[in-house]
Image (cartoon, rainbow, N blue to C red):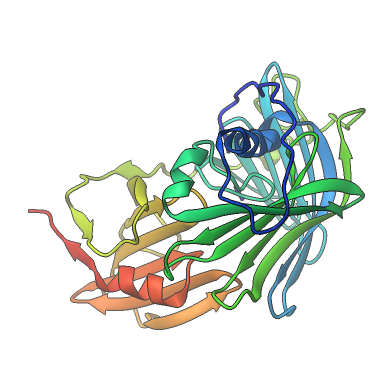
Length: 328
């Protein structure tokens, strides 16, 4: 689950969209994409959205409430099916509820989640995606502009996004494979923009949700520690993927910390985990998938290398096979 810097949304001129098959987006349309990127962080909204994988076998229904005020950005995300899952965030603090009373406090990581899927630096996407538009459609009762991100290689997926034509808030997002088949999608089914939105879940100082008692607040987990950038090298990343972070992260059920590298091209993310195999008997190598997420693991010497990414299977395999130790 997934934060953005607080940036004041500029008043941009209305972008008039042409028919499908038009040339790639020009300067004014790049401005519109930037409006889309910031809308999820600067707009007050509350609604219900559905996640579904391409096969329809996995469906999740969630309710999200988002408020931006003088104190920053606050968000509440509640899972509406299955075991209680709730995430409440205020700026860079996150409170995770699992089940009845289990609460975990952790620093917020720079991950993207619906409807905040677009990066703030839109211009870099044009290096690796052909960005076009189609005629508008209606989603959750709102008129939406439609933007398609078609990859320029076969190492990443295509993305199709529907954004509210007034605010730019993302209303629907679909990930497509090379045959234009839907792999996964998010879509609002009900949405309220602005107006009176419940704020009772925000604490008076925004430092802790008002619904939490002292007994419910668990200790923060140990922080991840930076590692030297030269320790581990990934030689076969697709063009446009840049390292976002590299840390040494303590993980549950692991005796030693796990090295975690994160790369992104703006739309897609790739994580590389390197850990000691040791005497573990539960180590499995090979490929698996969860919707658009591909997971590939391999053993190299005494290390288990696992690559997780919202990219095609060939990409996670290519990346995993290229991971090597380059330290002293």
